[in-house]
Image 1 (cartoon, helix red, strand yellow):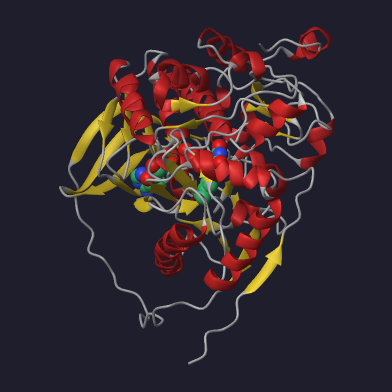
Image 2 (image 1 turned 180 degrees about the vertical axis):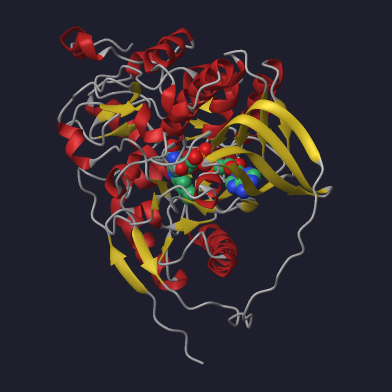
Length: 489
Ligand SMILES: Cc1cc2nc3c(=O)[nH]c(=O)nc-3n(C[C@H](O)[C@H](O)[C@H](O)COP(=O)(O)OP(=O)(O)OC[C@H]3O[C@@H](n4cnc5c(N)ncnc54)[C@H](O)[C@@H]3O)c2cc1C
């Protein structure tokens, strides 16, 4: 049978997007469709209780790590439940080792707190990025140099380093253990425990079977809203067609390369580079150019990006893995043959975690929306500040209300599934923003648990004050003129 021709949409880079890409939509599956029909009634059963705690964080990705540490530092007894064998989520297991911008366009670090602490604790050779003195520099030569190394955008040098994922796994783990957090790996949250409209804990599945874990507050950091969706909270699934935020792929890394040779080629031989791209697209169908990593001998690939498939459908997820594994080997062979610096390349790793950018977004009490981008307003319940997508916009105030479900108690959400519109999701899903919302959710959950309140009832000024003592950059909306003038360093 003839393969259907994939539909390629060229996505233009605009000032409202972080990334441009050739996204492709190809819904046909490699494997035959499933034949299941009807339903099967599972027998009711009693499950053993695993533990009682103040705060359970479901998902140990960027948001979950920040949430657990922040909650533990409020004095709460915290458990993290993670389905894989490590912390870091996509930033480690998904090989998304490019940590996006944490600075504003003047070079001030605006995403701080956990973001600053965890990167500072990594060994110096596990982080590659521009020196602090260069952040915000608009010098053409510097911007040109750092643009090819993930850290300059719109002609401005930014703080957006690449990191060693193994060191991030270890550092995150040790930080949480030091803070007294109980880690539970290899444990899949199967169902929330909900009573009278409030989440009281979760049931998880592991090699021990099903077990119940009770908590005063649950922080949903699954990235896919698994807890809040199953507990009955509202959510959105609409997507921004022109953005990559809804596409999936499994990232991979090639070892044995010489990125300096590759970058010299990219910079100095633009025609040969575009010829290579063309040839790659012809031979492979879809072509992904590499990014730098934290080492000269490792290249990072975060595509080709596939859209039109859902990360809430197990057959679609399987399809993305099948295609991504094929792309990985095909790219390695192509690069070995044709790309300067890649003659000795080998496939070091295809990510153990599927690269999911978007599934559900919470229907929250508040919401980050496109209209807000230009206002520069400091929201009364600000829990942090996101860099904007282009120098045309000021930084964006992130409200606590975007983490709180409109109608569900006992739970806060953090990470890539917070309440925002599809356009704003393009940047709110980035790793630093997930650290930011994770830390705020953790503090709020700790405060709620310690005071016997629901997350929607906590005094936001107390959350803001604790966040500041934890190193986060949180402005005071009453002090708009002063802080807008340029705090943040
Ligand atoms: C290919 C790709 C490229 C990207 N590029 C960049 C980039 O260059 N820079 C950048 O900053 N960001 C980038 N991103 C975005 C960023 O990686 C994610 O949005 C971010 O990691 C989300 O963090 P999170 O904590 O919300 O979720 P995740 O990182 O997805 O972590 C969620 C964690 O929860 C666990 N979990 C989920 N469900 C359950 C369950 N039911 N039970 C138990 N555990 C569960 C998962 O195993 C995972 O560890 C990219 C994303 C992708 C996919």
